[in-house]
Image 1 (cartoon, rainbow, N blue to C red):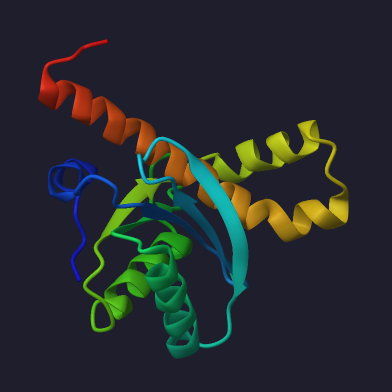
Image 2: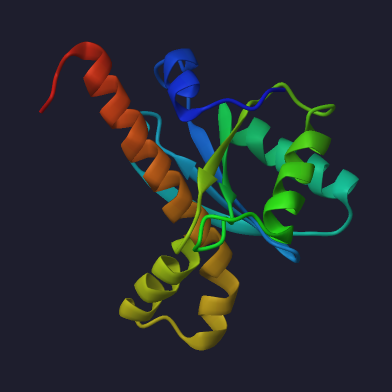
Length: 163
């Protein structure tokens, strides 16, 4: 398993390979997956965190079922650009996954993804209880959609199509 940049991922993906978005929390892992064309992100039910080994098993079983080619994992950078304990925990999680999978990880700046997800759920008039259940997967979907949009722009640049 390797970490790579979004540009390296764009160069390595084959057509029809979906990618996953992850929002790593202390109690849950928010999940999202792209369509085969890598244009749209869809939230999936969260994984409840237990212990790392079990979390890794559940995540990799889900990735296998979804045929995931890469993970886009939110990196919770502080608003001032500094790294706090959550960034360190996310990097440690990815390092620990290196022995368990060949699926590459791409770190993605997730600043304001939870705020955007909360706002979207409020606009859909989702109840407070349902928002609590769905917020991490909605955040994972926002993280993934940002990366998918970047992949599309990289594909256009590579093909010489600026439109």
